[in-house]
Length: 173
Image (cartoon, rainbow, N blue to C red; front, side, top):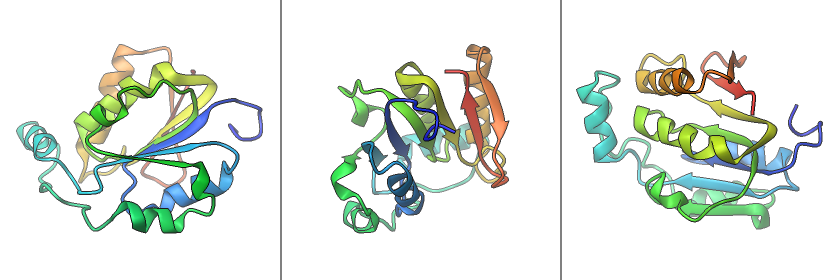
């Protein structure tokens, strides 16, 4: 949809892990910059504490740490179009004021997902799409809670399930 309708802007993925989905974005949107946000160290202690306090999940800090920027970069067909941003999101995104047509949020936990929606929504081009992974995943209930909270605060947007049985897209930008 975004690719074929002339919607401007770049792409982003927050929560890259080993870069398998980022590779697809990079191939499909080879003519746009792809911002890749990740700690490349797994879950943060501060997010884990929030998850446990709210009974969203019982995951541990460091989960999904089996990655590196070099591992992800090696998978990118159009490396020159990738902008790797290592660090804790949204602090790592300070100073980025680009516009986006497609964003994938795959950070699994409430605080990063909610922060991603708050950060990217004002930067979305008209007709753009934000995809949120793990919305239907019972292991990461914080993802769904974050989307639902953001949707209560921003009711003009539409949420639609994606055929992978875990993700949703948010439209109406």
